[in-house]
Image 1 (spheres, rainbow, N blue to C red):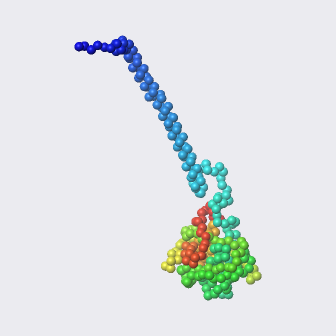
Image 2 (tube, helix red, strand yellow):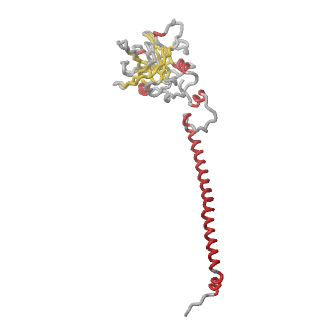
Image 3 (tube, rainbow, N blue to C red):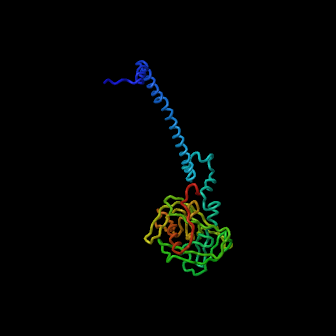
Length: 313
């Protein structure tokens, strides 16, 4: 039996002529072209803009975080400041450990140590504790030591509270002195880390050969500048800083500082060579060696960061 077509199929075949079929097919192809080549790029551009906007926002957030975290000017975002910083503003932002110039700091921290057998130098590490060399007060007992400076305005009695076992050259050679009262205006020096060769340093002290004054006048400390020549570890466990900031007898116990006013060594001895072709060698015990002595004796002190060029005077 032959199947018959339904009325619906017959009407559809009558309506869908070959010409009309091709017209519909053409319209469908054109619609696909419009969607593919027209609408798709618009959608892609919108997505790209959204992604770019998000990335730019993240970039700005990261730049802001870096600008707040960095302290070095050369690491800051060029947009983080609108005007250049003046040198004094840079130093203030770096939070130096003192106010005023370097000479004022060192004058207020350095003292002349005197007793019946001689004299030397020393410096404050807190309001009433002074560091010097043991050999400066060798053989002196109890509170038979005095310290003097222009800031103290006269001699002040000091008591020896601790010393190293000996004062042999090449080994630790330290003594701690204590004064009974704190004096207004006294400055204490912080202890820095090990210096490096060619680092600029300053020696401060009261070398007897350089002081020409009568007993009624309080001498001023002598300042000399130079460079670190080498760091020499010793078999004793101590470290010596060889430098070129001139010192002489009487300088012993005085500070060797960086350009920020922090201790990098304690001037201790001079070694002269018999050959005229060689200059004297100037030696300081390193700040690292002093740290060990202070810690072993339970003496508190303040530490300083490495002196940067932006902080230096």
